[in-house]
Amino acid sequence: KHKTLTEVYKTNSFQNLIHMIVYIWALFLQGFYICCHELLTAIILEVQALSILFEEDIRKQALMNVAEKMLIAARTAPKARGVDNLILSIADKDEIVKIADMMKQMVQEGEAADFFIRDADNILRSDVLVLIATKLNPVGVKNCGLCGFSNCDEKNKYPDNPCSFNTGDLGIAVGSAVSVAMDARVDNRVMFSVGKAVNKMQLIGSEAKIIFGIPLSSSSKNIFFDR
Image (tube, rainbow, N blue to C red; front, side, top):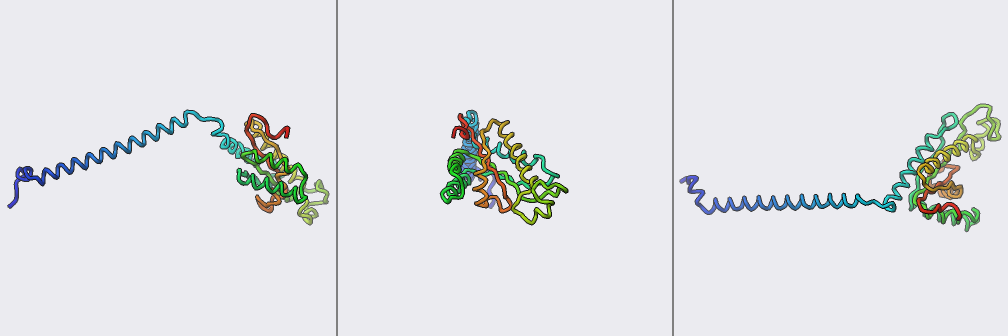
């Protein structure tokens, strides 16, 4: 026999069902409230954290941003006949430590002058190191002879001898890069010693033959002078 709706309503089973639905709905609302509360709290804390930003907190990232712009400036610098032989990179703190260790090792092994130790200690105080290098490939300027050979074919017989335009383009690129650092008021110094160590380590590849390192620093006193 089928019960009427009124009879079902009067039974305990229907009342229990209603109670269960109400209870589940209450749990849902409670969970929703907790989630919203935690999310809102996290947003408020994030906003509060960003409201006061100290220079020490953004220094390393700011230096990295300048280093990246320096690479772009070096890449877009003028080059003989538009031939690009540059290799551009940035070394972080971990790589800087390795490079400094190599610089000191080279002095100990008699492969470098004593000032390499001074420069090694110097770069250890830097957060970012820009590396600008060139390959040794002639650019094919006819009747040049600036390298000391009669033509590029003769020069190619001595692959370790640089084309004059390779070193010229490298110098222009370095100057363009450090001008970016100057515009950003970031202390820097061009270091041949760093390049020698990087070259020995083959850190940026075997094609990088002449390398200069440019460490960057942001401090109240320029660490690259009065050393």
